[in-house]
Image (cartoon, rainbow, N blue to C red; front, side):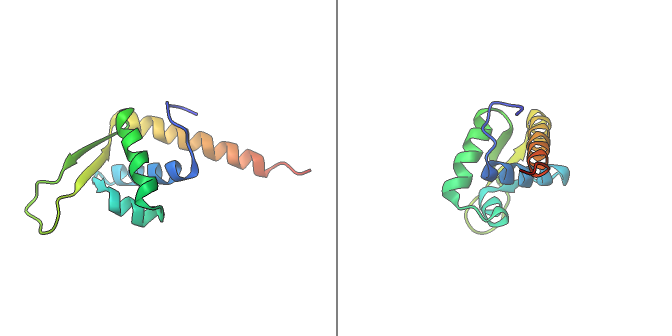
Length: 103
């Protein structure tokens, strides 16, 4: 696995959403990630904190004039995009290899 993070299924799901948003050049936010992945905030937000700590994600407050509470927007860093894509590809290759075995 590339990078200093344990790539669990929920982490993979969060990274996939973040990479998709990065490909669209659109920041996202925690609640949208929860809704897309189906994982609760108690799972998603700690993952996002870890990703920010290791430099794969950066966050900032949305200062738009939108109504409602402010959102903390998230976007992947260049380092994060590269390492996350590599880590997800390695995870996919490992899981594909395991399915090929028969006892």
